[in-house]
Image 1 (cartoon, each protein chain N blue to C red):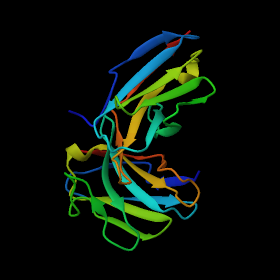
Image 2: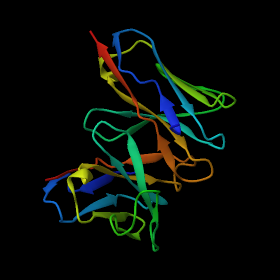
Image 3: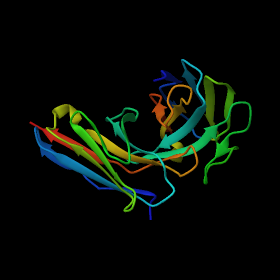
Length: 117
Length: 110
């Protein structure tokens, strides 16, 4: 499977600031996704990062709060804007690699642990 | 009602035990099904896909019942290293979107 890295691995931020999380894959992949996992809960999809076009957001998530870029087939960023303590969570990037795997299998990066004070 | 529901857990079992996890999903158009494993403070990792005919991978057996919209995972001869949270995952029929269950925590003790 593809090797996925995320930066930063963790951060502590002040409310009102923004943080950009990077996701890098070691090979070209068809789909990239961003998830949030709040403490003690399961994963919730934030958006699908589309290469060369605007991301597709899930209900409850908006572009102004979570702008996403995907300039090519191996890289994406998620920005958490105007942060509040409620944004404290783990943010995970995942990829779907239809070039090598026929089924809709997703592989996850190691996650970014965010604490907002 | 949640789209994917799992046994609440936690399951505390001795080494060598057999343990079964159940999962139901609400979207009858779902096509792909998976079990992921998530260790504490780690990312989810794919354990196995679930096929209509059922499939086995070593000590792990997954079953799918489309009529009942039910998925199961059986772990035989539990090891200490099996301790983790097991996530039932279903695609949202026709879209590249995975829906995760809340997970069932397994603790295997000596």
